[in-house]
Image 1: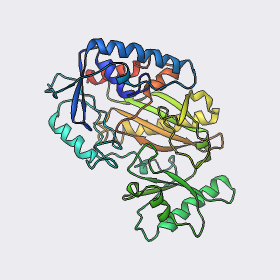
Image 2: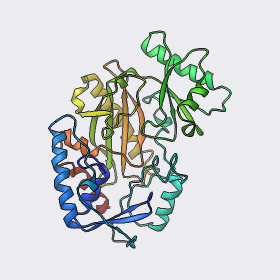
Image 3: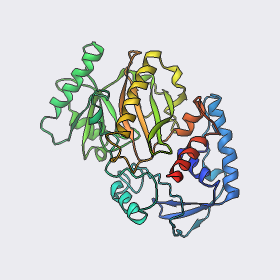
Length: 362
């Protein structure tokens, strides 16, 4: 966990304000204890680095927790009904594919069975790229499998959408595995009649393309970056926007890794004010629609979810944004959004504390 930037660490440090914290590592099947003294050391360093983000100091080194304090492994402890449970499993890391074999929904279901009365983020059966409800504001998408006989026909239709948006005669397309995150396996192609999409998927990592595959028009605005909107539940159990970040891309070409992850060096965080006025208005309108659905039609469906990271992509016309995906399991950037936003600020820990207090209030 990277100090000053990592959302999971923000939750841990806020929880340590109330008591000692125990971190269960699912990948290593071990437990660590963070005592009050260690938490104070980490909190001081966290605020220091987060303020540097707030001051737009440019490239800020990644300092990891184990470089500042040393934890000892202990036996897992028993959890009581009075304990606060924070769940931050990442479905693209061990013990989940492509590294491991466990199923994220099965693991979450098992945790829920063990702790039925605890409030924690539990998005069972919810998927980041399932955006059918928002087809009018989401990036146009075609889904297929590598054994699909109509594969090229589906992809070609997406290419035609690109041509219509940008009126340049090209058919530039992004291909991505549906069930992976952090741009794993994502690549772009210029579609032509002789394009071999199936072969291209295998060349970019067969392990990513054993399941459903998505094709989308290449949105030219991605060269500038994308937007993360952090949404959390309030005291009343309603979703509300907590923070927003424009991730200004540091990619040098369309052939590079598609990630705009801040911690891994794919972007630098900037305020939403860097967007055009029309883009900001479009972002606000489309975000409001998603929040309305979450608090209305999907209220029961999302009753076990307490935080989301909504990603928007710039179309590239200085007017519009399109919904890219909704991150359910371990959304990041909330402390960064706090740092560069105009709301309440406490070294990147205010929003994490707010969400924890909201959960305790329930």
